[in-house]
Amino acid sequence: MLGPKGFDGAIIGVGTVATSDGDEEVLVYDVSKIIDILIMNNDGWSFEDAQEYIKYNILGVFMGEVGPCFVHAMGTLFPQEKDIIH
Image (cartoon, rainbow, N blue to C red):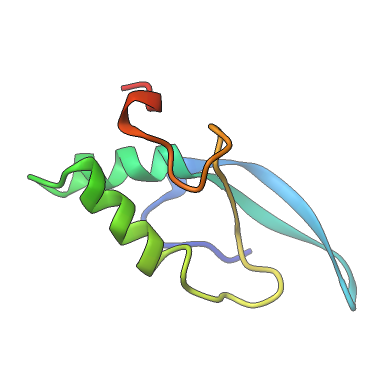
């Protein structure tokens, strides 16, 4: 299963997607947890820095038909800082 390196702590489960070859399992990541990991591991990064990084370097990268799934728990593409439980 494919996923971005360094974000195992943001994995919340495994999902199933239908492909032309049958059902395939994919890793499921919580975007809020990825934001927390980025802020913790990059001294001085703001919430907005983490959002921008995710947008262009994680969500914007095609990893094939069976790439990872990213859950936006708050129902938005990018939750607001007030929505994140620290």
